[in-house]
Length: 472
Ligand code: UTP
Image (cartoon, rainbow, N blue to C red; front, side, top):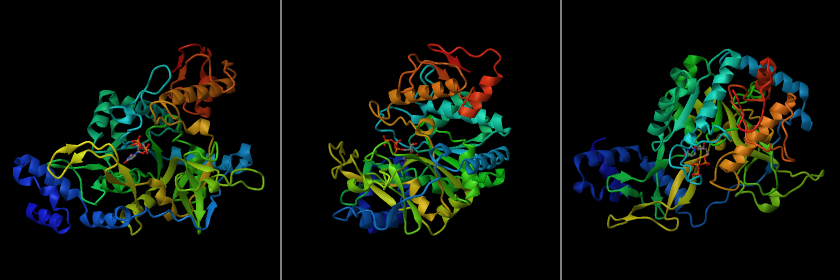
């Protein structure tokens, strides 16, 4: 498209103000603005303005025919132990055959944590303060050794943190991983609009663009060539996790096995909600489809519903851990099924009509985001399995309080104590399982119960666990 046709298209769509300062820009600034503009799908924005922005009241989520989703309970909670053992065996086979790769979504802006830099570069371990990326890299390295196949790792970044993320891996020698097995790609961007539907400018030569949400990962995987690479490498399954959760067991043979044996196209882990109003999405079924209903969309009385045994009915909380089939990713990225956008009202610094930068005190605009769990209703045979929260989920979301660096470091230590004491280490701990001193286990020593036990039994002199100890 020539600059003239692009500008005309914006004018015809009622977005001509984007080029209000064009004449006064330098040639390179004009080129930047044109590049931003070329990324905008004007028809999509018009449709989103109609369906999400101009609606006087936000359209409520459809809650009709909603039932709690069934899930595979852990054996200790009544699940079928033989079926879990069979799943684990199947998953181990798939891992040994190199059919699984890891996939972290790391394109978020981490505003709640208030940390300046890609969230994956945030230090999280209790003693050595290893970063999130290092923890994941070492888990992957250790799993590759265990299954006799180095695993591939896909890392989704955003336009804001892509260069910094790549530079971080380079500066740390990819944490011992083969560079050829680590694949970075950027997610897509969406323009923000004002409450009147007009595209916002963050500068005279820049549209206010932001990452398109973790659901943008499906189209970005395809567009970036990641799906083609999976095909070439014989990778059938992608293990999806979020960058803020160092506890996640993203190489989990039992999970992979459940995915395979149920012929699921998209599988999920659930944890029983800790209390009725816990702020997690709820796995539900609706007219034969699996859906996730956000806590903010499920009315309080439904969140609190109990079954005959007095247990919460909508108990299955989503912790954003999924397995995705390669063919499903491609279908979602290129077929007729499309994820719906969600509206998020935000304070967006932008230019006013006179071209002056305004930093708003209250939400002045709308960002559009895709959520990965919206793919579930499109998946064939989606399976949900239970996991222990203590073994899979302790995210760093906030600077303080709930889900903060402090709670996450403590949860890591509780996990280390459980692994050590299951092998007779006798580490003291309080009633919550927390030791009286900080110590840590390198993922290279153990990244789950089994790998820890294997290293422990292989060490002739058992490691001593005391204040500041690091098991390597
Ligand atoms: P969150 O919803 O916690 O958002 O993302 P965030 O941007 O990290 O943090 P806040 O809300 O600004 O404080 C959950 C996961 O999804 C990824 C994040 O990097 C994190 O791993 N994500 C989120 C993306 O990859 N892209 C996005 O556009 C949004």
